[in-house]
Length: 252
Image (tube, rainbow, N blue to C red):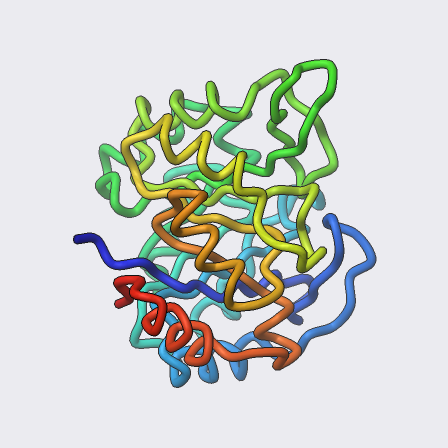
């Protein structure tokens, strides 16, 4: 039986971890290196680092910060933001990341997914999908550039497309739930989890331990990601994992 994973997320802007609500109203949440160390000690299964303004500002991910964070970790580490080429991927993986996360770049150049998967293996390629409900579409629409730009892609179709091209994992964020702490979007998570053959990480909306349980049981997610509830010490990774184990969830 596959074990479920709890993954803290460091959204980094100008070298600091930040957190907002629905991708806006960002506030400071601390030093990425210090937080990484804390989450490793708390028993996090993995860590995700997203340079959230890199694509919007058209610059590269902060390699030095990635190196500093990687030096503190004994767990798998995924890095995203401003990765637009095979060379960018090489640089980030050499800096200590185990996986790269592509979002905007994958939409702009889907061939990059295949190139990355062929060169590094599918296990290294995570596709981040920012999803927002669209009444006109009657489904969820994919957004890029840190949630600033709508695309023509419907989420489930795009998820299936990236898997076909070699993505080994999907990081699925509900923009509608981001930072709201009222639970993951279970219908979105379940729809994508059932539509693809790779692990899906639920993201956006975690407020308490029961939300992780719902994401795994109802949402069919393989992993669940959270930021603010961990950064602001509302709960800890170990508390969430202990709660899930007590409810019979097979944890790492």
